[in-house]
Amino acid sequence: MVMKQTLIKSICWIILFSIAMAYLESAVVVYLREIYYPEGFVFPLTPIKSTIAVTEFWREVATLVMLLGIGILTGKSAAQRLAFFLLSFAIWDIFYYVFLYILLGWPSSLMTWDILFLVPVPWVGPVLTPVTVSMLMLLLASCLIYFNKTLNKLEWCFSILGSIVIILSWVLDYWNFSTKKTNADVWTLSSEQNLFDTTAQYIPSSFNWYIFTVGALLIATAIFSFYKRNNKLHQ
Image 1 (cartoon, helix red, strand yellow):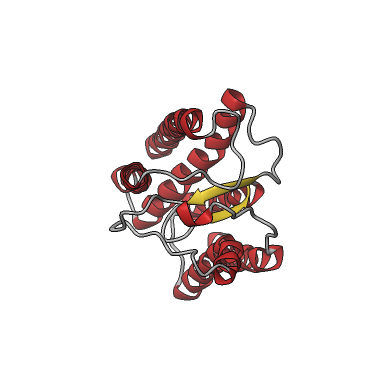
Image 2 (spheres, rainbow, N blue to C red):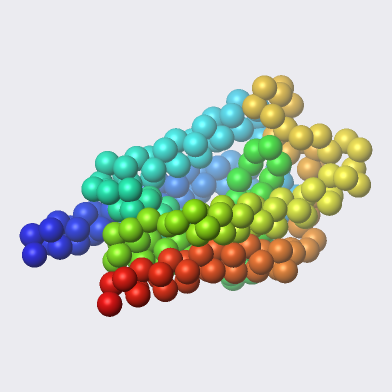
């Protein structure tokens, strides 16, 4: 009973922590958009000074380290540590968009295009896609917490492969654009060029829902396999 209360308390604090982090993340975006997109965020992307871009990249890395850290510090087992990381990441990502909508009235819909990551090329996709991934993370985290067991090798393979396929769906549109533009260089941290200098004409044109769906189904398959396998042992 005491262990159950401790677990519930940990989950509640992780959720609160993740919501607070989401607000901090959205606040930074509010400031950046006030500077670079005072009339509202739209594509094509506005060039960003290399110093700001490097700072922004490491801020994103620091955010991931903090989310990973809360899982490692709070979890009592490998399954809990993974579950708490997934839980914190999913809550953070979902509430990031919730707060942006409250503060800026953006996104106008789940089909609104967003830039998800910066390096080495822009990751872009409709808001619905990262939210869908977050929902899958919440589902997997719930299963991990309930059974307190981790994935087997096959389930890990499905999850990792699915994640790679989803990332491919996010970079594919820009990749298609860059192959048609000889001056669309890849930005790197060591570069002196401004981030998005070569994307001044890039406006997302199409999202490959087929590839994204395949990736999501691979992850969903891993979750279903994990649940089915452990539910039999749990009965």
